[in-house]
Length: 331
Image (cartoon, rainbow, N blue to C red; front, side, top):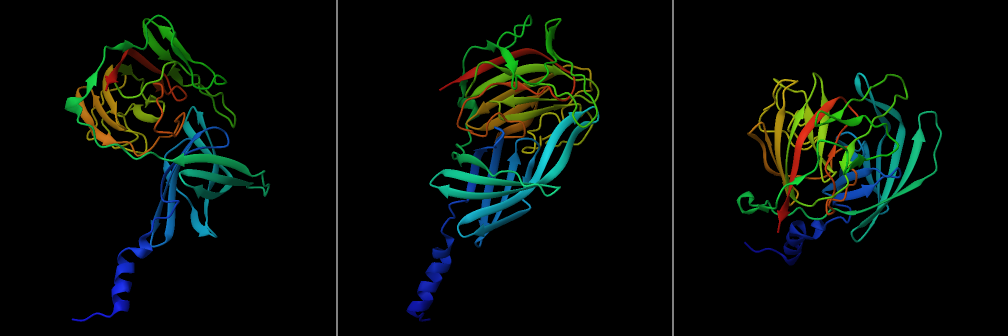
C-alpha cells in the first residue's frame, strides 16, 4: 500500500518529533529557603506536567497544581509546619506556597511566593538546586569489598558525635555503655524540640551494623549518609510498611516485618552501595539491594552525589543504640 510523503512525515513525527524531553523533566535536588532538603520529580505526559516532592520533612507528596506558563513551571503546595508532641508528629497548614521554576542546563532556580491563611503575602524567596545525578547500576553485592570496622560509638562518651542542629535540645547521653536518647516531649503550639545526633565523620559507601532497643511506641531512625532514613519503630506484629521498622521512609516497603517486641534488642546489618540499600533486620533480609530514588524527610541535604554522616533520629521518643560499627567500602 502506497503512502504519501505527508503521511510518512506525520508518522515520523508521531514517533519522535513531539517526544522531545522537557528541560524540567526528571529529578531535582534543591535547598529550601530555610536550608532544608527538597527532592522533586517532574514528569511530562503528552506535554502535561505533573510533579511530586519531599519537602524537608514528611513523605513524598504530589503538588496540588502544576502548569507550564510561558516556559515557567508553576507549582502549588501547602505551606506547612511540622513539630513533635507527646501524641506524635503534628502538621499545621499555614497557607499556600506557589513555586515558579526555571531551568538552565542542569541548574534549577525556583522563586517561592508564600501566602498565609490570613491573606498576608510574604516576600518572594529564591531556591536553587541541580538535576539529580543518574542512578548507578545495581551493585553486585557478592563482589563488594569492605575495610576494617570503624567503631563509631566508644560506649564511654559522645566523642565523635554532635547534634545535627546545635539549637535543638540535647537528650542524648551515655549510660551503661549505651547511646541513649530520653526526650521529654511536651504539648502545646510551641513544644520543646529535641535533636538528632550525627557522626562528625562523613562516609560514601559502607556496611553498617548495630543493635537498637525501643520502648513501647518507640520511634527513631537510622539515616544513611544523613540522607536516607531506615525506620526504627515499635512495629512488632504489624503488616510491613515503609513506616515500619526496616523500611525506608516514604520510599521502600520491607519484604517482611522481622521486628521483635518492644524492649528487646534488635540487630541491623545495612549495606549502602551505589545509591542502593540492603537491610537485614534480626538476621532476616527485608530490603534486597533496592534503589534509593531520592532523599527522605529529615535529610540534611538532597544532593545524592555527596558523602554524609550516620545520624540517628532523636526528636521522637526514647531509644538505645549499641555496638555501632561501620565498614567502609574498598573500591
